[in-house]
Image 1: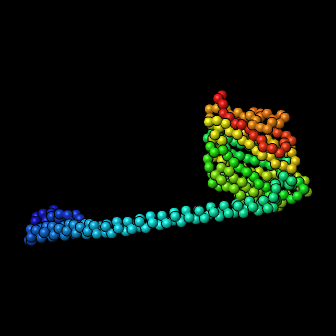
Image 2: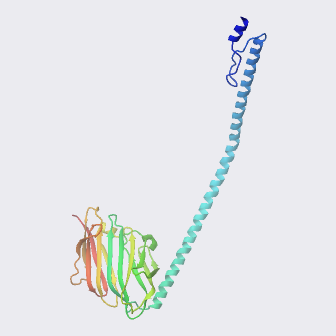
Image 3: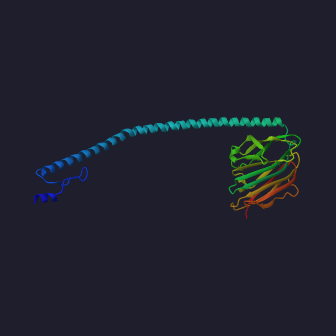
Amino acid sequence: MGRAKSHRRADWACRDHYKYPRRVRQGPYSRCDDQLAIKLWHALRSCDESRKRKGAKGWFLFFSATLPILVIVFGVLYVHTHLRLGTLAKTMEARGVTASKTLHGMMLAAHRIRQQLVPASQLSIKVLRSIKNTYVIHKNFDTEVRREYEIAASDKPLHFWEIKIGVESAADPVEYPDDIDFKVWDEGGREVRYLPIMNDLRRKKLVLFFLPQIEPAEETPRKIVMTYRWPGMVKQINDRHEMVSWIIESKEPVQLAEFYFFLEPGTGRLLSCEVGGPRLEGDAPQEIAHPEKKWPGWVYRLQNVPNDEYSVILKLRNP
C-alpha cells in the first residue's frame, strides 16, 4: 500500500534553470532536501541578477568614458575637413583665374594669327551659295538655333571662316560655347574644328577650321551646319520687340537666304515678324508652321542677296 502511494507521488524536477522546483519522491530526508534546493535556487538566481547588474553598469561606464573621446575625435575631423575644403576652394578659384588667363591668351593669339593670314577680310576667298537659319523659340524664350551654309572657295583655298554669335542684354549670360551646347559639322563627313577668339558673356567669335581646306576646284559646295541653344535668347520680346540681324559677306551674291522663326504655344500671344532693313524686292515675311512641331511661325526669304546687314523685328501680339 505504501509502495502504491509512493508510485502516485511525483518526482522532483526543474522546469528550467532557475525556476522554483517541483516536488520529488518523499523520503526520510525529503523536507531537508526541499529547503536545500530552495536555498540553492535563490542563490543561483541572486548570482545571475548580480551579474546582470554588474554587466549593465560596466557598459554604462564604458559609454560614459568613450563618449567624450568620440565627440573630440569627430570635432577634430570636422574642423580638419572644413579647413581642407576651404583650402581646396581657394586652390580651385586660383586655378580658375589661371585657366581664364590662359584661355584669353590663346584667343588673342588665334585672333592675331587670323589677322596675319588674312589681313583685310575673306571676301575675296569665300562664296556663300545658300543660307538657312532656323530659330525655334520656347515659351520660356530659350531658343534653339540651327545655321546651315553652303560654302565654296573662289580663287584661293579657304582654310578657315570667322563666325559670330551674339544676343541682347536681356538674354541669359553664358561663359563658354559648351554652355550653349555649340556644335559644328560638315554634312559631307569632312572634319571641322573651331577655336574661340572672343568669349564675352553675350558675344562670341569662333574661327572654324576646314580639314582639309576648301579648294577652288571643288565642284560641290560644302554644307556646314552649326547648332546651339541659348537660354533666354529672345527674352526681350516679352516686354518690347527683338531685332534679329545678320551680316552677309560673300565674294558673290547669295543665291538663297532663308530665316525661319517658330514660337511654342503657351505664351498667350502670337508671334509677328516685319522687315527691319534693308528692303529687297519680294522680301515680305510669310506665315508658316513648323513641319514637325506644328508651331506657328514666319519665314523671311531672300534671293540673290548682296553683301549687307539684314534684319527682322519680332514682336508678340494679342490673338
